[in-house]
Length: 200
Image 1: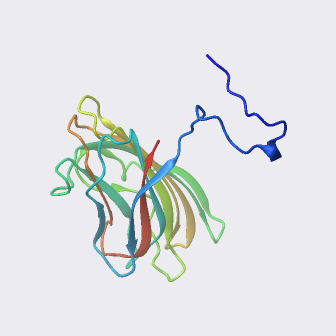
Image 2: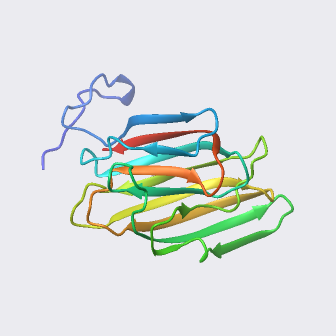
């Protein structure tokens, strides 16, 4: 393996980096900005073999009514969001009244189901309450393996309380996953921003 060196003697004086040095990065593909109530935010294009990993960043998702934030996957370009999934779900909880808990949410996990993957507790809908987080989707175009996903978020529940939510699982299909949907378990997403990146 050849070593590459910068040709300057101090870091402050470096003017060029050797062309053989490269690094990964986040490549913004699309942004869904929600400024008024919608039933869901869907990503139906550009999830393909271009990247092995896709990242969705959710920023200040605010529900129209107290509800659970969730997501689902499609193998037919978004005509149906009913991919079979198996998932886990646990959370850390701490209320403004100083009550706390760390718990596995067996009522919010999925065992070979097609429904919405639920995230942290009953998200509050007061003007200052929202949820932010990220979803990683791995190798969605594989026609050999299941499609793994990892989700983590920080949310304000209706208690009010802080929820640190962890969800992981897999879409149990060898068909390519080519669309992703975010929605509330009931009611609309009132406002928020969701960005989709390809990870290189």
